[in-house]
Image (cartoon, rainbow, N blue to C red; front, side, top):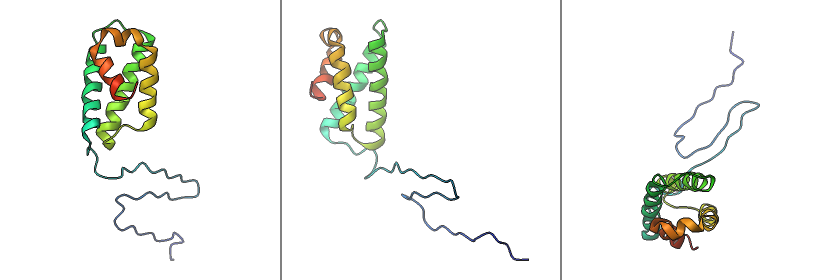
Length: 119
C-alpha cells in the first residue's frame, strides 16, 4: 500500500529559511556578510563597551547601572555576531548613558562609549 505522505527533499539549505507543516512559522535572522567583519569605528566601540562593562562591575549597582550593563552586553553580542551595532542599539545606549550622567563624570570608559555613540 503506497504511503499518502508527500516526499520532500531538501538540497543545500544554508542561508535559507523555511517552515514545514500547516501551523509552521519561519523567521529569518541571517547575517549579511561574514560575522565579525568590523570597521575601525565599530572596533573602537566594541573595545569601549568592553571596558565600560568591566568598570560597571566595580561600582555600586543600581537600576540604571543594571540597565546599562544589560544593554552593553547586548551591544557586545550584536557587534561580535553581526560586525556592527545597529542604529537602534546605539540610540538605546545614548539614552541610557544620558540617564547616567553622573557615571559619565566618574568613569572615563562611560565617556568613551558616549562619544562613540554620538552623545
